[in-house]
Image (tube, rainbow, N blue to C red; front, side, top):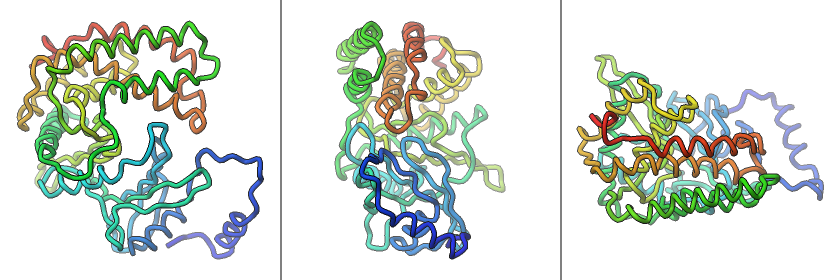
Length: 358
């Protein structure tokens, strides 16, 4: 299970058994891969060839390969500012989508049938869940973005008759932007003028949403469809399929929001205030694929995309600002927060109903 020599493992245990300093207040613990191996062996009955940390993000994700060569992803859920873990909904939704044949990375239950295990960490209870590894890589070519859009539509369609445990979270205006304002109000050294600017921005966007939300299509959203949460796999005959994963931000919401995350991701990664030719081409194929998969975004849904790109940016900003205890202010410096006001202003003029719409 572990390549660590026995004396090293014993040393680790002895260190962990030392009395904790009473002045230490832990905010986030990163578990060693050897701990992940042991928990999966204990609770899932799967022994590992190797295991390693992939990334620390909204959660801590580990790659694990079993003795028989099967690949898995282990998610160790972090304590997030939004509230409790939404795993009962996430795991039930994935089971429903898997039964429907949708392209998702399914969960692997523990030996006792539970979809996750609870673990006691210094900062509080956390949860661990095991998932099938999604083979392939993130979409890159135009046909792969079309495939991504088509598969997302199939997921939305398959989720229509989901009747399992409800989500703890609805991806509405309060979830996407209202909470971010609350996090900003606790940001050190933000300054009253900038906070007031964000307050006016957020209230304005929420008012805009209130006007149009009655005309918008509702779906169960994946919630994080930025193009890096699905892998495209090409088989020996050259046939491509794609699988979505990381449904921990899923919940009932607006189709416009789920569609907005991909172009938002490109705009923010490239520091763009307006789309370039690459994004225009990708969006055209993405939307064409979504329609080919049975999706039917209305003109109102497309017209609302600039609004939801801004709301997505506020949600993402809020996730960083709400985790200063974990990520620090370098994840969203005051200078960067100030510069985003110009970005929001520019994104108001985005138009998805004309040349972006094939």
